[in-house]
Length: 511
Image (tube, rainbow, N blue to C red):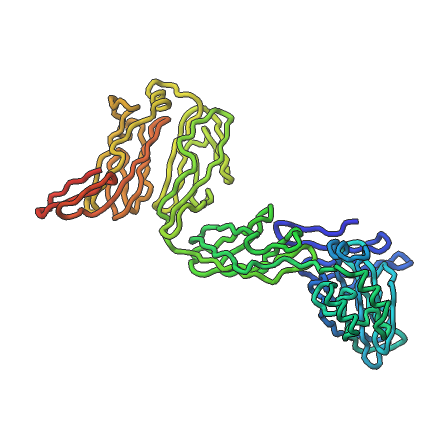
């Protein structure tokens, strides 16, 4: 029989129980359950259950107060785990069900549907039933009024022999039984005797299965305006019994949250235009026992994106080949951040030569060369995508020897600073290809710092550092550009370059 179903991407699911092979009830995760009854005439009756107790970790020590009208019955659901059955010394797990009736109410013995009690004892207004379980699963418990009576009752469930109600049956419980301490009448017959010792010994070693535990320190999550962030679920909750853990998103603030298809991550996406503190709440469970609710805080930063880079550059491919493309970005307050392709509008300029899927699969379709670009606002990246062998001698040079762009690094001043890039084929420097008419393309990494004209003239915008990517045919080169004010007087200029100025305002740039 099907015992449970679970949607990993939403956390929704249900558990089922059966009676004589027929579906007798179901409980949705975090939802009310139903009990199903079959009449002799073929009719089917579906009724809501009074409550789902969950597992022993949830209901041990609890008291359920309820009432019944004349002829009424309440049905409850509860779960027993395989580890709890295996831990009991007697080969089965024994559950103790005790119900106290207030004046005016007579109760039938507690009935676990589809099972026969090991014992049922009536002492005063209290009924105690013991049931033995050898199979993990969802079970239903029915409490019924008898003889035209009505009134209130008080229901308690626990492992038989767990006298101190701490979730296990061990030496401490044995000591309490030997001392005839309160609660040591396990069978409910009004005496503490050998029958109680037999039950305790049969359940000795039992330990309740714990639900997932929330991490003592939840992850500190940082993302940026409109940028999705992935939060690993194992950093939020783990299961002490090693059971599989499932998750449900309960709520979000200032964004949306979804589970990934493999249920390993939560993807949180800030609401458009929002920066500040956001959060999502989730609950973990092992299919039976839920965890406490975890509230994960997220800082949505307004720090600007400063650079974009591909994890692969100068992609030389053959028709039919594919590569996985990833984009990495730096923000003013965080480096090496994985960026979704749609966040940076990643695309191939000639889609007939190569295609790029939203998942980052770049596929070579036809011979030729083009450019893969990504950009957001004033920040961009570019690299060559070439398919097949070059068809001209000039392009062959770019395929095998690349291009040479000078200078490799350059420093210019913020006010009016500029520098011409000189580009040649290969490394010999004999054929100049600096102009747009030669087929050379230029891309500024951050146009808030420096721009570059179609013919390769770098122009300063504001202080900072960025790159210029030079592309021609199958070749490319990336230059470093610094925009810095001049340093007055005598100073040392290192390999990183710089600009110095004398008292008369005459400047010299190095690098």
